[in-house]
Amino acid sequence: MKEHRNVRQIPGESKRRWFHSENFDLIVWLSDDQDFVGFELCYDKLHHEHSISWNPSRGFAHMAVDDGEHRPGKYKASPVLVADGAFDGKRVYSAFLKVSPALPREIAVFVLQALRQHPSLGR
Image 1 (tube, one colour):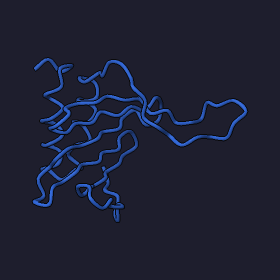
Image 2 (cartoon, rainbow, N blue to C red):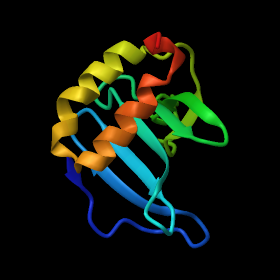
Image 3 (cartoon, one colour):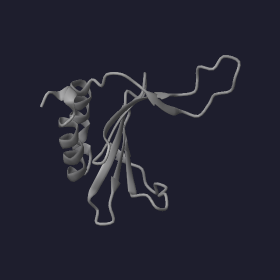
Image 4 (cartoon, rainbow, N blue to C red):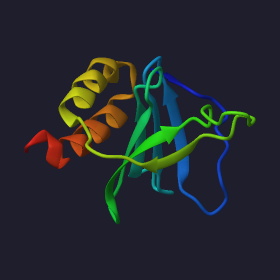
């Protein structure tokens, strides 16, 4: 995974770091003390993209990405997140584990530990 440089930071929000690969986008949020405060992992980017996110106050959220392409007779719309069903945690965890060595170790450990807490991985 490679890190995007010069990621736009939003005033009033935690600092963001953004990494990408062919199949994943990972955004992690950090406190002023550089502690991790959440993440969003987008996966299956080439087919039917989904997003799993986590932060300590709301826990996990699983969404699908509506790419805005399927609007007959209309221009493409901006992609948006929409509610989606089951999260195949074991498959996503396994795929992310394979690319995680390309991340800074502390980020990989944080995301993998959080993903292991998802109910679909059967603690």
